[in-house]
Length: 93
Image (cartoon, rainbow, N blue to C red; front, top):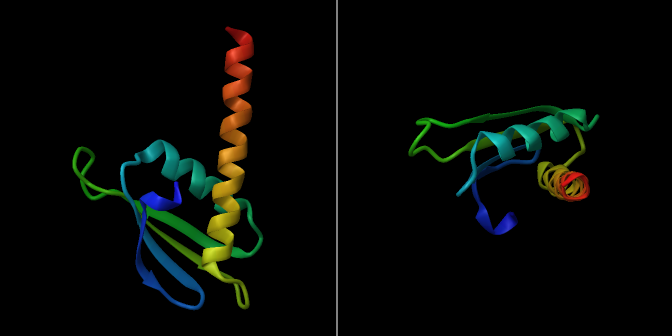
């Protein structure tokens, strides 16, 4: 997933990224995981056009926490949860 991410703006407490080749599904799941992190003040994303737009996500962290670190942690959690879900589906079929 990280190879599909382009950094737009990288500040001490705020990171804006573009996520290429992804849609609302991945972005919303990632945002949900980020918002569960107590170190995250907010995480939002926007897709300018539903057919051609590329999602841009902004993550703002609380004092002393780096957005890149919470993003990496959230991406690993999303990968873990996706794997668990895939396993449940495979077992059900």
